[in-house]
Image 1: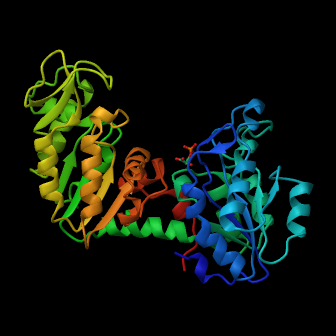
Image 2: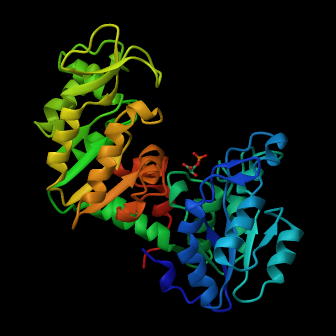
Length: 401
Ligand code: 3PG
């Protein structure tokens, strides 16, 4: 694939699709990770004399009333802080004001256009951005000389601001390249997982088996071990005939869990003990239970023997992918399994460690281990679909070298 460093950006207007879909409450940004992660691409463009015109969505825009909450203005302000230079915010993404702001740009300038999903309301096409109105993609493409897609978090969507622009650019004989963040995500979630250095250990957690079926199916042949914790583990334990009490359970997934266990031929490692409680509350009475969970209790974390088993397997790993917490880690009394798994990843030396998904990323931050992890993905849905082995439209649309 073509990447941003292949482009001669000098004096060029470079349209950049970033994923600045960050958590914002009352105008305050909760986590600016996605903004910081886009800096290498933006800096490459402006330090090499290009003009960077940034496009992003924020949230899901359903009505006019959402516009106040979902403006990218606070994001443009934060970008200016982290870039340590002025950033021009344009409160539109189509029309005269946009074109005037772009025509005024000097080399090295940065412009942020308003939330691309404002195009999802008030027009005859319907959701112009989210349904990839070709005219919108063409319009945006017409604003620049080249296009860079650095929005890995949005790569599972086929929208006007990623796929639409790329297609229009290519049609006009102009380049559509991947940004540095996109390239890094592909290197770790794609290449490192497709051709892992062994032993390769996959750790999966989270509430539901149904969310992870395709990931498990894709990774069974590649992994040496698949460690399963979190709510989804109980459906697997039930499939093995164990009593799981009041634990999370997907009855309609039991047969599938049986099949996956069979296909995995011993690679799937399940909890041998659980920290169980009488109710889903941090203050509930709790105890470590080996094997069957009593009828009035639910498993809310993996137990100490399981933690020890997982650590024993992890200590020799050369590639690790982790997605999903090992228990209800948002409650401190049930966070130990998740935190211990995070710690073991941080302690591994000489291994490639990859974390995807919001909850495991939050756990890594809580522990302060982010610097010791090789790659923490900026993608939620996109990283899951990539681990499922799917082709993502936001990557497929990028020009070949
Ligand atoms: C994400 O946060 O997963 C991406 O920014 C995509 O957002 P969406 O699910 O609203 O399309």
